[in-house]
Image 1: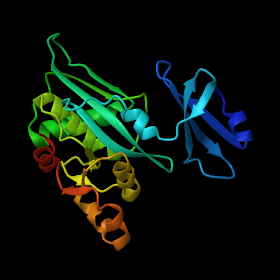
Image 2: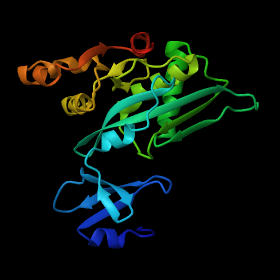
Image 3: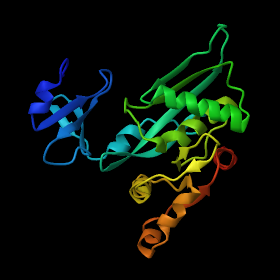
Image 4: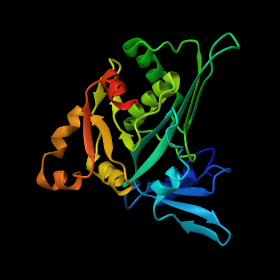
Length: 242
């Protein structure tokens, strides 16, 4: 771990971060600096009896214990470097009985971004979350910073609040704006291919991304996946909940 003045970091050609939760078996090797190449690459390993072993299918690892039909559970295809991954986001909304300011906890996500999404749900959807304790967790200890996870976080909270699960084998991807609109995300085709590989049958995605799915090759790659375009958070809630 580099601490203090970053003199050593400036001198070297490459800085690698070895990340992982102490209570999880997998570890992530991430490039923080690479003077002669890309930093958008990472390796995922699991700790076995004989040492570290590369994980060939990280999405299967992260979803291996996903509960079926559980309210608050949502799956989102994210990009970690150049690699698409499917991760589960779990939300829990519970009435606050302690008085004072309700608790807001986020593990693996930016708490400020989660607070923004809570405000959008209250203002644009009419969900009364002001007196609820809210907990958000990215299963497996993964840290997600990209805004493409917004839709999954928001719908996970709605699902938990209403105690209604999301439709099975459905992925969610999209950035949520302050007016409740759902904005396009990048590298959509790679995300969808990962979902098809893992057996998902449908995906809620921003309507603005439809123009990227117009070529024959892209239609061929997504023929096994039902594309459900949405424009707003309210529309996504109507379509996603069971």
